[in-house]
Length: 592
Ligand SMILES: [Cu+2]
Image (cartoon, rainbow, N blue to C red; front, top):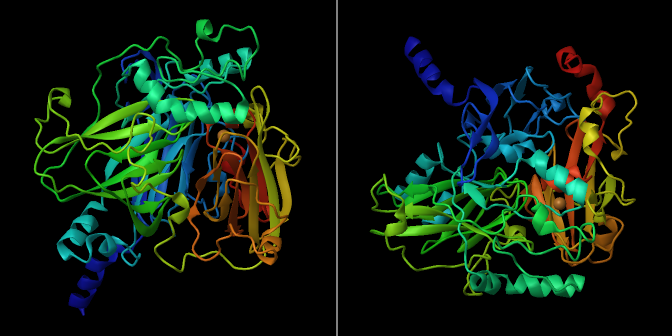
């Protein structure tokens, strides 16, 4: 009997939920990650912040000490907060801000979720100043994994991927600006300057500013200029940082934008020689990367010279693996990828190019097979097998790139309810003024002062704008029909849920409901095997339809993940059977 008991307890830890405790100490600092000093924020003295890790089903407790001069909250992006909507970290929605000198503890379960997530400040745009970090949840033993598809059931290779899944190699992309985001916001609203200009990307907090020639920028940006002209009628040009001159289109006429320095801007371009990130292969035939776009401005096209990329997981769901030369990493989204590393020697560039029309800019990290671990590789001949230019344009149009609509869940049971929805909510994404962006059909804005108001999760008088009270009850199937009327694509994020992207195209949806679309024989609907996401980009002047099951009573934010768009009004709060959860909100949260 004792022997059996012992075996039972030995096997138990794999399945038993554990409490994982973290302390996040927020401070400000003066540093130059890409060669330009500025104030930035750190978590436990690092940027990005420390990894929060768990096994599926564990409980996470994270205590935040705010030693900054600004209020803050921490949102755990993609974590559903099932049954704990007050732990969602959205100021004005789920809690009051954590003011300087205060602390707050977030407690929540990871039950029913695995894979890659992240945490970030949800106050103002402060996560772009450094308040962000990864969350990784190791899948439960019985989760269906697609590794055999990638390895063609080679048991040695599958075992390598299973081993690397415990701790995939971090690859965190973040756009970086010359100025802190408060200063950028001031310039944006004071002068009506569009802040669409970054000082390059950082990879794992590292990067360098390079200054390509005017000819190189013009060649990589030719397509952007042509389509900008076609859609706006405006002839524009790029500056030395690869930023599109938007003066003729936005901003107060007569303002000298170059003299004021457009937000994030440093004209003319000055090259730096700070360290870039290097990944060492160390003899393994595969590297599994955890790719997270932690930026607040732009999506990224990523490729690795001379290497294929297998995309295995997107937004915390294993997909039917897709083998590509280039992948899109949208703002807020996560991608677990496996890269076959079977070269014998060489140093290969990992390229990150801006996806937006507004800027041509590239950052590089290195994949190294044989380089001394102390050196930056610029003196070594990089192998020339390049797939994309600095504008993210494929050098050979036949090369496969990641089509997000094709990223269907690997587990076929992860499928949307069929037929009509109980609730349909229509949103219109639009630019309604110089620095006004909206998700509402009537153009209403959700402005940042709502972050200081009584949280809409329990406010008696839900007085903020953009509260969507659609009568959603637990068990309802909900459709969000999202028509994008503007030329910019928007990465739309829904809190508290994972949704299926059941329709997408570069035109409007054209139906008042999914039921009408089914009856009308819509060609864009996909109820059979759609992507399962928490953040998804609504294409330029196109549409997406998100479907989810209301299983999480609360008040959930729905917003664009471009920080300046969200601050310019681009969000809403969707109430979901709120009365059911109000009696369960802890006093400690309401009184905080
Ligand atoms: Cu946006």
